[in-house]
Length: 412
Image (cartoon, rainbow, N blue to C red; front, side, top):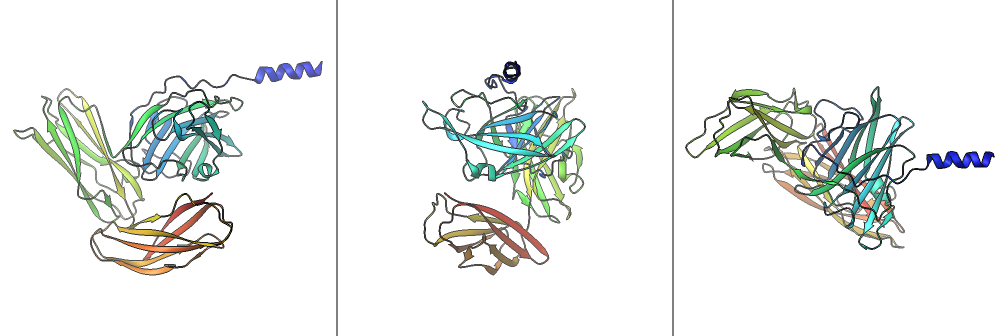
């Protein structure tokens, strides 16, 4: 009797696989470069809404090399993100990944698996530890539910780069729900990674930004020109310009009359601001609102970077496999100046434990010209039978400033 009752209870808990063929609506398919803080807390304008929902909103943005996902979810619910990193269809190729996040023990717990659909007749789930290792997450429990902030970088996935299209959907489910079999389709919405976008732009109007450079260091100034071409009849009246989110309070906010169009329908707006020395680093979004006589409003947005004095850009070999002997592998690091001044400092490469650097372990460098760069090759001595995902730390010291970049090297 007890066995029959237990079996009946088990059957009551078994559910059919989650249906992921429904339409997934997004607020805007153009996703801006915008850097959040992965701390589990949602600050004002820190995140860009992807999917609007009163109970489970989802957010998506990017910066070169990193995809950012976030959301607010009810207590007792999990979330599954389906990512088609080439935007070419869920059952195509080996670039699709499922990320499931559960709230447990006061923090989000992330698991991931890839869908190998290179054989269209036999798609299969595969576990990729490098994908999971490339995900950083943080969360926070709130009276409304639980927050999730997540950064995805992986040597096994196509990188986030300008112009890439990505298929995305997010499904909220109960902990006992199972996701669909690998051969069943998922209906994702395709989004594009962009520097700029507009909403409600008046009929006949076009625009594009003009940058001398897209980056600025704290304490320096940046000027962004917005060029407009108006073939319509609507005349904007006033323009409000400000940097959103973490840029608020460390950059200028302006409200000015919209400039007159010339006989060819051309006009431009200049946004020039000094960036405060306390500004946090990362990509920020300039937002310009303007309206017409009828009260209709248009919005344009463009991303720019608040950067350290230098960017550290390492290049490491790919497709390495384990070998029984120790060996030397070669790489290169580019130091790219983000300032018009001469930059001098020290670069140190910190290898994984039991590795060593044969060249360029701690070298002094000077970048003489405005926003120029220097390249430095290096060699690493890798111990025998090394296998896994290894972190290399690149430390730059310029006066009292210290910057660090961590790069991942995979040996299979």
